[in-house]
Amino acid sequence: MNDIQSQIISRGQTTLADISKTNTLSDLEQIRVSVLGKKGTLSEALKTLGTVPAEERPKIGALANEWKAKIEGALETKKSELEAKEIEASLGKTKIDVSLPGRRPHMGALHPITQTIKKVSEVLGRIGFDVTVGPEAETDFLNFEAANIPKDHPARDMQDTFFLGPGVVLRSHTTAVQMRAMRGKTWPIRILCPGAVYRADNDATHSPMFHQIEGLWVDKKVSMSDLKGVLGFFAKELFGADAKIRLRPSYFAFVEPGAEVDVSCAICAGRNPKCSVCKGTGWLEILGAGMVHPRLFEYAGYKSDEISGFAFGMGVERIAMLLHDIPDLRLMFQGDQRFLKQLR
Ligand code: PHE
Image 1 (cartoon, rainbow, N blue to C red):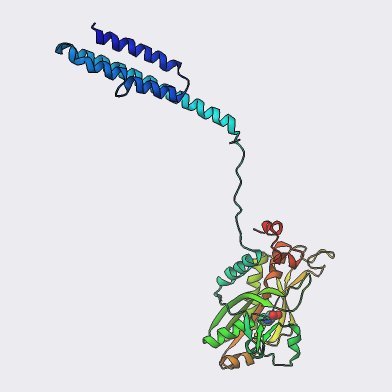
Image 2: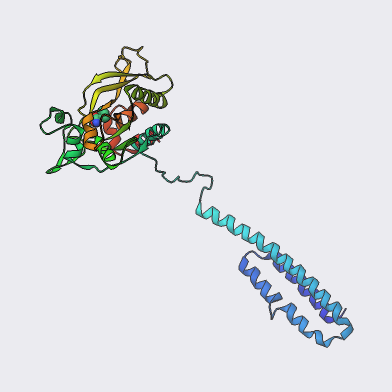
């Protein structure tokens, strides 16, 4: 064995010993550079290769490569060992409890009024009603006059109106949208008009702004029994298969005859005289309805002897309150997360 060979072996052994004693990554790097670097001991030793006889060079080369691989392997093993220790140590310092559940982002949800409008539109959409919308600032003419409520008509008192200026009101019902729809196109018409409406009223069951959905079906030979069929279907889809409806005669200027429509109480079915929802009557009023007054057809430019139609209108908040058993209308408008979260 010549000088270079024994040098390689002894340097290699010391290097392996040094590596195993090292405690930091920077010391380890230093060892790597001092042995394997351009000017490292192993490289330097190989530079003297020219001084040995040619036939011995391959043997020495192979020995050098063998030790290089050994040292590299030892460096790699030590490096992962030290890195793992470093991570362990920093975890101990920063004290992050990785087992704690994270903070969830707050997810928004549709407001119960929007949910109810969507639900009603979906149910009636299945039997051919299309959603139509109109402006909230409406002409006195379309809100009242064309709905057969002329100036000084007592029916105006039923809807305490906000006036925006001469001849312009905040619409007091979505009936105005029906007028717009009829004036814009010819029959047959089968539409739903959801939207905000305004009346000067404010207590636990009335809000100055609330929402209505009105329905209108105009065609040849549309009858009161079609109205009952549609509303019966609607009640069952919304309140359950056992829901029944009943019509009571009532007055709305824009329909003749007119009716108030009740749905059977899903809570007690009329069996609990102390029921807080129906007050023991077994019935809940959910909407107004009737056969479209011929005068509305005239305003729309239709021939009232060729066609007929029915209309109905419901308060969205009232429907939502019944569906979710909500005791106070004002909860709908306060934006209280504790309330809203329950109705997702
Ligand atoms: N527009 C009426 C209201 O606001 C509801 C209604 C609509 C009644 C259609 C009958 C027919 O009270």
